[in-house]
Length: 224
Image (tube, rainbow, N blue to C red; front, side, top):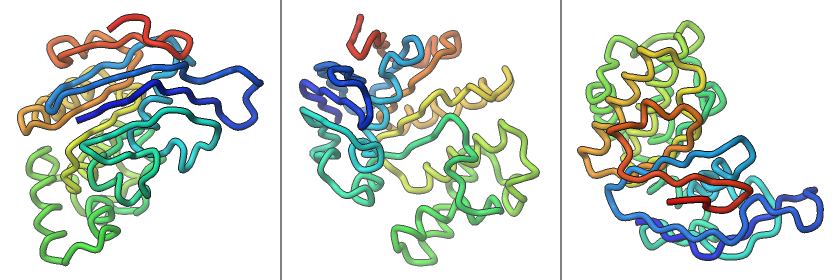
């Protein structure tokens, strides 16, 4: 499902010779859940941004190597093509919201893909039901708690039905109860056969969730 080959990335304006990742290779099977751990600046977020196509299309720099996701070279493909197979949940859900109400937010990605209205409505209902957030529909985004915003973020991605889910420090603004609910959401995705990559600092909640853990250090894989 995921194949990264001998990847080097140096961002624009970075000092000469300073690479965010240094020759990493990574392979993932379909349905696998991978935890990416390591200190801040170790390269975790860089890897997630490569998988979802934000590198090199949004974060520019010099890159060698490539990333193939389900047969698609995401380092060359247009972002709208990558978005059909890779869904992203960011550290701060507010940074990925486009709408001011929850129902519109769940529908936005499907609308952006040009899906028929009936299909969009069906996917919104299904995503809300799967994540048990029917009570959050029709609400103002600004009235939600941090955990509720994270649920809306997950549901909006789930409505697109991507094969790969990428989460960048998804628990950073969540309390213990909200973290457990997020874990249950990911277990549901795992049961559906989704391939999931989670970059995290908090480790305890990843127990019994991840099939595999990779520790990053100084832009390289310290252990797998």
